[in-house]
Image 1 (spheres, rainbow, N blue to C red):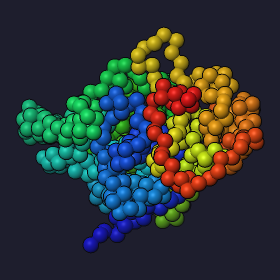
Image 2 (cartoon, rainbow, N blue to C red):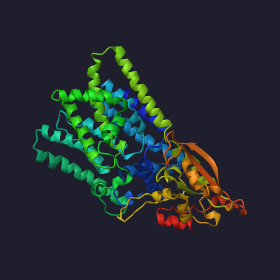
Image 3 (cartoon, rainbow, N blue to C red):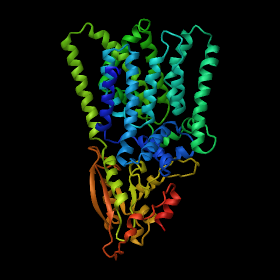
Image 4 (cartoon, rainbow, N blue to C red):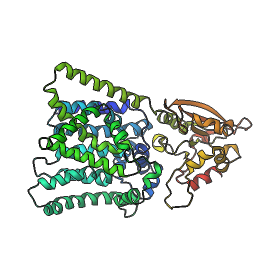
Length: 523
């Protein structure tokens, strides 16, 4: 019989699938769903990380299996292809929540904090590597041998490491603690447990990655080579070393920050009394310090330490509530729910939703649209690269193109990626990269933010605005308040007679590289 608390967690995570309808980061789609769509259906865009072999196929292969099942049942609709992977992740997150609850000896505060966390509600059902990494961290923590010699947690840590190598960072202090408290010699634990389990999980990862990649590849090594040794991550933005202290961790914790600081202070003062809390704090501190040394920083990188922070805070609040009045406890709980609810509601339902709302419209047009010359749809995204999902949300093999932004992997002098070139001179880029005639060779649809419209108004003179989707209350220089779709028209065209071949037009080939894109549009 299922535990009632598991059902509560499951209900919360499933609810987030349908209540979190906004855009967070490109990796949610481009590093999971898009890859899975290519594995299952033979078309889809692979970013440079996949061609360079530094991403693991373990997670996308799981989603691809789900896609294959839907295809076999002949129910591979766009709606199911986009929703069911999130439902699958919600199930995994709910199980992780329950394991966290068991780890905390079924503490009511731990269940409450986890279920009401705005951040975990916001990302807990997203198809992000960071989400599955956090789920695996919670499960592994529940098996960590605080009072025993069990090493089952290493299987989960090993799997997580080969899926995303940086996931090992929070485990360094925990594993050192494991060595210290164990009654077995360190060399014995290293050889018979760590090395053996690492070898087996590594063999699984290398086997899966090499199979899908088509040649022998060590994705973990490639990941570390590009992100640490070559520092490619800095290409996507840099922050000061203290960013995680004043912005990263406070954002992830939200309203939990203040009680977490109180709990941390108490733990440091009485670290011999609260040994588990102290070890977890060391892990959090170590993780923040290591990530602070890297130039590229994002909120999601700290997700794996969220359960550790919540454990420390839940234990502190459990002890505090023994002395506090019931009225004070209820007021604190209502305040936490209210603040988290507002944050989760705004970020999940309002902020950055336009780039997702536009995709069902494009999916519908991709299958049904024919221009005045009976040509199928051809979509051009004039937006910062990876601003929207791609074939995983269209599920139709039409030609689509977006502005590319690969880092300078070949170390060229004065390198400027395509997206940056476009924004330096939008109309200049259009004249250089898009055909002047015939009109039918131009994209049938252009997707862009409203802030770009004045800069490309000459190009848009042969396009009509068809639909507009609200995106954000905080527009910037490149990201506007609305996402707009423009459809091409030619008032001087002589329509071709439509025949029964309209519905059997051969799909256009997928364009996966910049040179082929140019050939397609300049044909």
